[in-house]
Length: 250
Image (tube, rainbow, N blue to C red; front, side):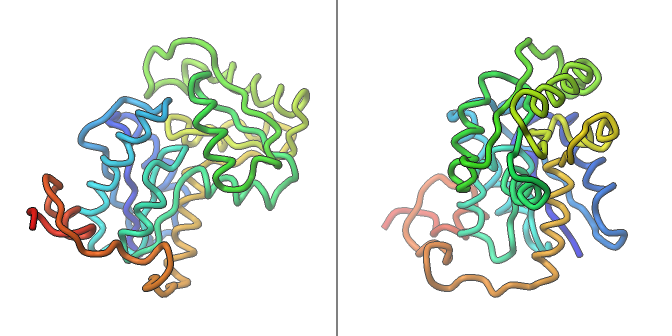
């Protein structure tokens, strides 16, 4: 099995964190291809940044999905996920949806721990889009500038553990999600210190991508997730144009 994992951010240090957790989670015979967005921002916090990340992700998926059995959008908030499902002939999963669906099978009320206060609105909207708002216990987040997005686990590890404890004690969370690719692998490191189940988006997404690939679902040929209709387009990278239309203007 081959999985394509795309980091919608430009931070190669974060891609390394994603890769490390993905390798620990994947089956021994699963091959991983890691890609980092060629343009965009260091990490996504806002709706505008998410839109940019979505486009960067679609470009990477269009260019590199060939020969892969499934793909992962490796940023919490899942930028471009629904569009990728329309566009690609293979299953595509995202960190948020995978973590939420996994957490929902481990407890009733779900708490999220995140890296910044600004990111909360986008996360809440994403949770609501997946129909899980009623299960959300709350979102706890760091409230300090980040020195280096690739070292946030080392720089803010104890604060993140304290946020997890507050989510359980004060918000009544039955299960926790450590949110965001920069925190990939942290759940594995701190789970013995947290009194409720704790899940990681990367590990959930990798294992669910493997599951869907093995199920080999038939691609949609009708409905809202059927491939986009052919139409003229202009200025898109060649691989992307080939999936959503054709180059040129008629």
